[in-house]
Length: 425
Image (cartoon, rainbow, N blue to C red):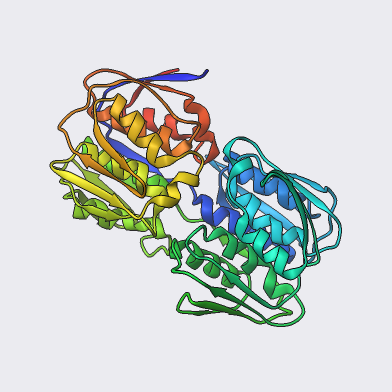
């Protein structure tokens, strides 16, 4: 078991926020579906992004990589079609990879097997299964778990999709339906949660020449026979990762976050508003966000549109005055871990007071936490949130299974140390 020991220290300094994982997935796929050479600038090879890269290679796409400081530029040579060269796609533990690539595999009539690891094997795919039955698409699995075998072809038409389970199913369809013969329509049958992720998809699609009409998130109208156009695309910084450092500044000293698009469509950009509402001191200077020592307070936070922020919001709440309620968080139970149970359990081990409910948390804040031994639940966002909690602990924090941060942010603990963190593996 890999463990890391963190000596409590206030963090201070400048950090370059890594490129958005959500946008990187989408850019790789759009470039892979284009005909010709695209350049995707500013990428890191987290485990999730590596899974999507290997997956898109299975469809006959060639990629080249050029190092640029901590990031890479990726040259994607697309054929404008799916040319299956590997019928087993390993999605590792990446839900985005799995749900985005399944519809692409259905664009040809050979069987493709999707495999995965860890929690991904049991994460729900019922939205797709329901559509497959309606559309006559062949699929087989083992008791609802991976491996999943699918065989196309997928056809244009009307697709009714629930919007309160995961927006990833909608994104998967949005990649493929524009390429098919005939027009299509996606009808959202419930309230759409995580709208920001759909916005990101539509924005990246537009950058690659695909036009889709968004009818107030109730339905998406898609013209058929469109073609992706190769382009030069730069991935902006990731607000879901910036959230950790912005919180670190509020709990510690001044932290400057660079490499962010201040006009971003990322739903997790709302972390700025949430921290400010909690009394956090965040200012804008040029293209950077600066957070500083603050006397934060509890509020009510609805995370239906920003579920990934919940672990770090919980940390800030645990160290704020008064009570914070996190609501509309039921979907967090089917992430890389049951994130509601995970963050409540582990923060309570550190001396926090977090109460867990079916669809949310109630946190009674404290000035300081005690410290101690915690576990990441093999969840990158839990590990990073617990590391930030160490800033205001009386004793060291030992995080077991800490290296799961490679899933999204391989350099997290290097950046933690550059900001003054004292860390021993």
